[in-house]
View 1 (tube, rainbow, N blue to C red):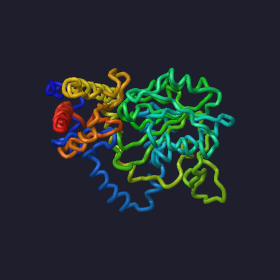
View 2: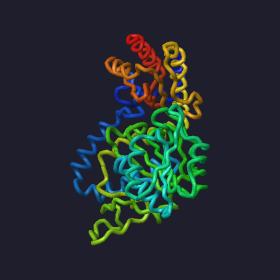
View 3: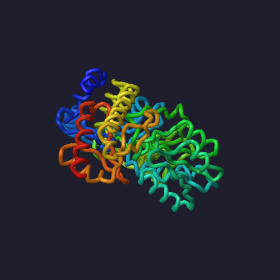
Length: 400
């Protein structure tokens, strides 16, 4: 069956474009750090020799200063369903979460609550707690099933006239629960609140249409399914309708209306550039350009179809190979409600993960007892999934 799945996979040839994909190593962590593309080495070399080494500081005027917006527009068009002028690249996910949360609550004066769920990613929760303390606000928590996520019913019960901002993840980092983004956005808007979506586990794997959904704000990283490399910069989306009213709190010179005026006071730039602060991380933006071109070539719809097929195959193998040993699926069984990874739970999964790493099988571990398999659609084969799942069974059997 596995041979047939790989033989009929329309995206199979793309796997050859990733460094290390031809090796026996089983990589189940593409939702934490994507494999590098083979094009990346030559691109870095050319940049060092021709742009950095050849043009030196002239590169800022010639191209570099515009890269955050230019790549942001590409990202918006190919992956995010966002028209030009609403996405920029720079900073880390944490810093951009702070910028957008702080700007959002300032735009809703008189409202006193930030709504988010207890299973949201730790950074989102920690930043929200800091903003709430800084601004004298209250966190209103949504309790969720750890194998699922925030539903419309749960959100409707949590929001109200005091809600300034709702912070949600499109794909839950633990369970892979795929939220109903348009409906949850509507519910928040009906309460008069703004919505900030964390797209870290969906951008590049699950189709996103921010403009169509009416999203206000979004943040995501670029080192998972966008294969930007360790520490590659994050991105932020601010809907065009909000750009005139939102001012971000980290007022750096490159977000000002005329950076080279070096004026005595700060005035924000028009448009999305106002959410920049300091010097753009040019080196960190190089790799994602090749990945965006690859996703555009393959089509995000085809990428999602492969993702669904891979995770469904992993669920099927889990039922066959792992369930008899007491392993439980901790992700939605319905692929329409599941993102690009699958989590299986068992009390020994921490030890299983350590044993697998020793055998060149690389999954992630997440408490409580969760083995998380991140299956990056363009660099993962069905044979890799089957081999890895059989080795999971062997590792578990060796510990019981």
